[in-house]
Each structure stands twice: as C-alpha cells, then as structure tokens.
Image (cartoon, one colour):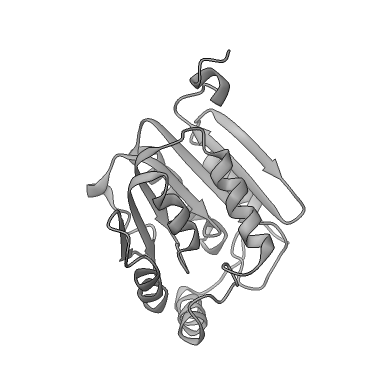
Amino acid sequence: MSEEREVPMAGRREYFDALYEATDDPYGLRNRWYEQRKRAILMASLPRERFASAYEPGCGAAELTLDLAQRCDAVLASDFSAPAVLGARTRTAGLANVRVDQHHLPVDWPMAEAPFDLIVLSEIGYFLDAGAMQQVAALCSATLGADATLVACDWRPDFQERALSTECVHSILGEIGLPRLVVHAEHDFLLQVWSRDRRSVAQRDGIR
C-alpha cells in the first residue's frame, strides 16, 4: 500500500460509532487469544514495574486500560467515539485510578495533565493522516516526563480504514529521538518501546 491514504474524518467517526453502538467489544479484545497475548507482550515490554501517570488515547473497549490500571497510579484513557467512551467508562467503573474522556487527536491532547510517565499508542496511529501523526509525535515528546516511556503497538496487515502504514507511524515516532528499548516484530503486529531513560531493565534492576 502507499504510505498515506485519504480517509475522511467524518466517515471514520461514523464507522467507529457504528461499531461501538453495535457491541462494546467489536474487535473481540476480551475473548481472542491473539488480543490477550498481544496485551501480555506489551505489558511485559514496559521497562518499569510501576508508573505514576499514563495516557492511553484510542482506548476503545478498555481492555488494555484495565491492564495499565494495575501498573499505574493514574490512567487517563480516551477515545474520539462517544459510544466507545461510554463503553470504556462502564468497563472501568470500579477503578478509582482510571478516567475516560472523549478526545479527538491531536487537538484534544491533554496538555494540562502532563507530564506523563507512560504514553501508550495502541492501534491508533494508522487511523491518522501523516500531518496529524506528526503532531501527535510532537505532543508525545512535549508531555513525556524526564524518565518516561512511549509505547506503540500496531496491526501490520492492510485494511480499508487504514490511513498510514504501521511502518510510517513507527518511523514518525522514532523521529522524536528517544532511545529505543524494545522492538518486537511479528507478521501480525509491530511493538516498539522508547524511553528517556536508556537503561535496560537489567541495568535498572542493578543486575549489570
């Protein structure tokens, strides 16, 4: 596919609203082993055991949000689809350390909540055009704390609603210039982790 594909924003919102109005888990995040395993790999790739504050835009059904809540003192999750936000709020209603807001990126990026110890961009970057993705990358750089972590995890095969290739999304994030700690590449998805603290997990733990 080409690096960028024109996808009208209004049509994209209608697409997601219809998905989440039909079911609160349109991608089968709760039941599919692929999704459970991918989340486990992502969580195991985080270089710290615990984080003070995390931002997770594009939270969708909030299954990853639930995992992040176990490792973070506070999680701000968001989605641009109102039905998705409603479902995510219901899913996380019992968690005092989670808040779910409706954000349209990049304009609603929560600058006032910064700095974040962790930003997780999971299955969201390829829905943005190149200009918006570059703005998101700049906002990540501006709102990550002194030793913070940035994670990107994205589906690799092509699909109709895709605006950017996964490789393009990760390349834009790599241009921030943060040290890269993890690259996990499979036929299905690409996961990368960057951190302002370039030490490995073993170095952080004093093993080496």
